[in-house]
Image (spheres, rainbow, N blue to C red):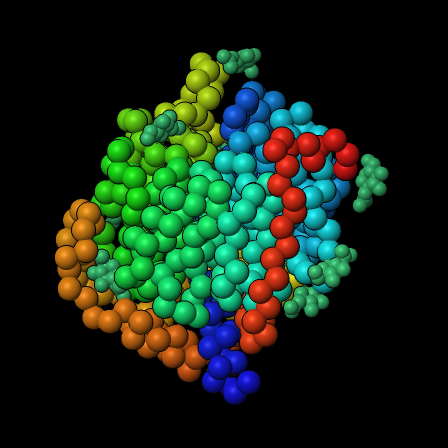
Length: 424
Ligand SMILES: *[C@@H]1O[C@H](CO)[C@@H](O)[C@H](O)[C@H]1NC(C)=O
Ligand SMILES: *[C@@H]1O[C@H](CO)[C@@H](O)[C@H](O)[C@H]1NC(C)=O
Ligand SMILES: *[C@@H]1O[C@H](CO)[C@@H](O)[C@H](O)[C@H]1NC(C)=O
Ligand SMILES: *[C@@H]1O[C@H](CO)[C@@H](O)[C@H](O)[C@H]1NC(C)=O
Ligand SMILES: *[C@@H]1O[C@H](CO)[C@@H](O)[C@H](O)[C@H]1NC(C)=O
Ligand SMILES: *[C@@H]1O[C@H](CO)[C@@H](O)[C@H](O)[C@H]1NC(C)=O
Ligand SMILES: *[C@@H]1O[C@H](CO)[C@@H](O)[C@H](O)[C@H]1NC(C)=O
Ligand SMILES: *[C@@H]1O[C@H](CO)[C@@H](O)[C@H](O)[C@H]1NC(C)=O
């Protein structure tokens, strides 16, 4: 490999770490999850404790799962939530009865980003070549030589971004009709990330604008007027979309059947957001507590909307032992109790200069003329490469974007009825 291509490779890894990655039915959070279905359960990875354990809230009760085991990322879906253990060698899931089941264990093929949409569970691995493993999935995993840096799962399909090529986004899943339609709708955009909802998807393109496509029955793709790189993170539910503003951490939500936004979160600044079907939770900047709102939020006089859950302080990001490219989170050492540190996301707009002219609202159609996008992205990548060659990118997570064209896909057999909880 030449030095330049090696730099481009680490650059791709950096971009991945820059934009908070989106996991839908998830959102930007990797340390907060919502699962729904028979009951709503909100979990987080606790800060400042000897182990980075998972603590959950359900029906007014707070409980720990596996009180002495550390996790680095969690996600939730329909009647399930899962966590990737620190280090990435295993994936554990819990059903509504809180019976744990280990779905994966491998010390050489490590998991990182986790995404759960409805019932399928997907994770990015550190394999070379195709690097997404999915469980409870069925057919439809692509065999192209893609290497995804960001994935997100919605109702019956998952989409991801391969920053190395000009393909827009890659979508696959049991709902192949939706997957194909969404993938096609993004072909003309160079996307930096993607978040999937029920039947819509959104992402930030290489010039910093939020693009949403797909079903618009509830106005979920009517992106509000915004400027380039105004939004840093997304959380999509079945019929709604929320976005986090980079500058002040405020959240704006649209779509849904009414009530998807809450007046009480207007002054609140969040570190990350995560979505369930028709509710959203955010991790507050001021005290790392979890606040949930939205029309689908548990209807109970005891838990009003905008309810601050009685969980412990939640980590704003995973505690990692590798170096951080763009600095560490304030109080990282305390929050991680000496076990690694929390990386600050890099500010991508300093590498991709923002466009001052915002797009015409709403972003319903693509009549706006634009310069060839691949050029723009390549230029951006080159800018990264130049910076990268100075040696700023010590340890990004996925520097192994290869080369080898490994098309292997490791699918665990999808059973009709999910019975993985029988044994651990
Ligand atoms: C409301 O919350 C209380 C207290 O946790 C609980 O006992 C009750 O079952 C809840 N009601 C509903 C309708 O969820
Ligand atoms: C966690 O605690 C249980 C008992 O509560 C113990 O059996 C187990 O070995 C502990 N695991 C670790 C990793 O310390
Ligand atoms: C880990 O994955 C690799 C590659 O698929 C495989 O060769 C190896 O046997 C796996 N290890 C375990 C312990 O399953
Ligand atoms: C993934 O990480 C493990 C542990 O660090 C390492 O042994 C393995 O070689 C990595 N895989 C690739 C493809 O780099
Ligand atoms: C954050 O910025 C947005 C857009 O500039 C503004 O509308 C909003 O009022 C600000 N929120 C807070 C809490 O400062
Ligand atoms: C989302 O919209 C669909 C119709 O497009 C509807 O069937 C579904 O119930 C809605 N889901 C939620 C959670 O509001
Ligand atoms: C935590 O921060 C939120 C938002 O700023 C605030 O509403 C809440 O009262 C705070 N909670 C505590 C316990 O300080
Ligand atoms: C990003 O989206 C905006 C708004 O649709 C558009 O004007 C711009 O050309 C897009 N950038 C690229 C590189 O496609």
